[in-house]
Every structure is written in structure tokens, then in C-alpha cells.
Length: 73
Image 1 (spheres, one colour):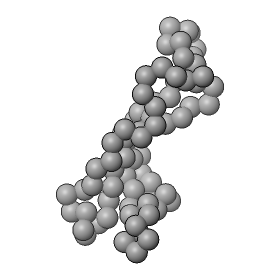
Image 2 (image 1 turned 30 degrees about the horizontal axis):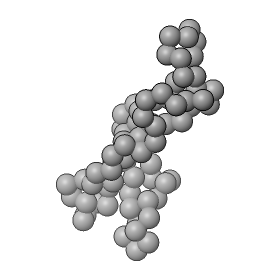
Image 3 (image 1 turned 90 degrees about the horizontal axis):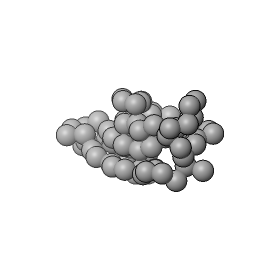
Image 4 (image 1 turned 180 degrees about the vertical axis):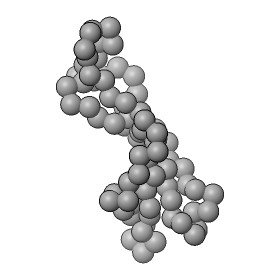
């Protein structure tokens, strides 16, 4: 189980020109298969933090998940 530290969505912010480009930025912890809670265990697989950019559909107000661009990991 991965129960140490924070997990999931941390922050959502909009681009300064959101009304023109509909960009939303999400900072979240990405799930990693086989994640181990012991950081000191050699070879353990831990999740990582990610900043991704998405485009919001102006009609449905939903994120277009196909538009996801990973900005930072």
C-alpha cells in the first residue's frame, strides 16, 4: 500500500489567458504500480508528482483528457 505522504490531486490553477486558450494546470501525485511505502527499501517503486496541462471544453466545462501534456515530473 502507498499510504505515506500525500496522494492524488494537490492543486488546480488556470492559465492567465484562460478565456482565450482554456488551459488548466493540475498538480497531482501519479499512481505507480507496485508502489511501496518504505522509502529506504532498495529498488522500491514510488509514485511521483506531476504538473500537467489540460484544455477545458467551453461547452461541457469538462477537461479534454486527450489534450493532457505533462509539463513537469
